[in-house]
Image (cartoon, rainbow, N blue to C red; front, side, top):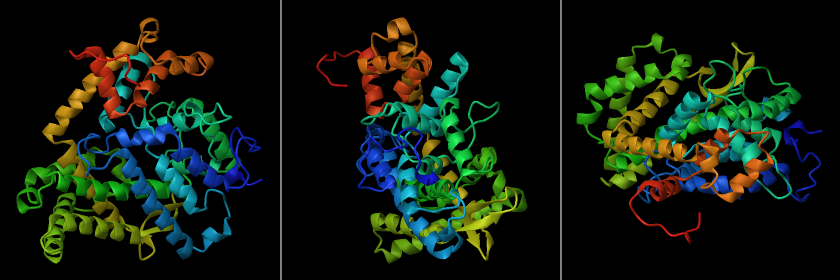
Length: 438
């Protein structure tokens, strides 16, 4: 049996055609799912609907998948051990990485990271439960989504599910911030056991998906920020001590940055140098592009994607005894390039997310999500205003999810615009129509 193509439920493939490869079926199931379509209405950095030029969760996911697929092909050519397929977790199928990249943000609620933060705070304080975007991915794929002949999500192959699982832990464990909810972890843990995966390590495909997500974020979001005028390409911004200090603080506050060993370098000097180099490069490319800002933005994005992609490789990880997908130079991990990417990520974060106008929108979204939760929270009154199909699904499978989790699932599945619409129906001083379709 090919353990990479096994499925948790439809193991005999009685509900799918036989004329396609299993990974092709996964791709079709994903892109035809409502959850995938709803990504077009969910925020990436700027709110969905802010303008035709800015990225949404959907376009971001498409861009991550394109980068990841191409890098996977490159790695297959440059790493002979991949062809030996010695272990199901040490394989690099471009098709698998592509599907995993398309699915990696399904669990994000409306209003971006703020929506995720608010839902988690509500569930933790009121119900003793957690909400986390990566965990919600698996709840959608393994339980909430429906397909013909199945009542168990999209029932994707083991390879794709584990390629999405960049945090191979149970979120219900004490102190765990990222992972998989306990209900879905049972299935994921079973697949990992069938594969013989070591504890706490992700497959190569999951690692590549995660790295390509960072590549896209550190390049594409900056492009959006420049276009929106939030990132002014001049020395006044890039040499501002406050910007340098803010970027440094974000790096220090991010627990995931410990692996980059910032203590080995002068962080302030490196941040200043990276920002200076980026501005210098912009000025050079700006002249090369005939002083056209739009061409310059695209060329800067392309050059940085190329730079990061060319550095991706696979090395042995002495700490875990597994292999690691990371930036490599001269046969060892390229920490300088990793740190540079992190600086660009934090540049995007402090100039876009921390902008006071964006923070005002976040405050607005916080209020909306809190009041939507308050409206649905009590079963006796909430069931009167939740769509019938959700109630039918809840009653049919209520042993698997408490009312509060169902409410969180319902809110998390909303697009930005739909969340605002429902909120307006409840609280805005306007008249709606019962003929509007949800």
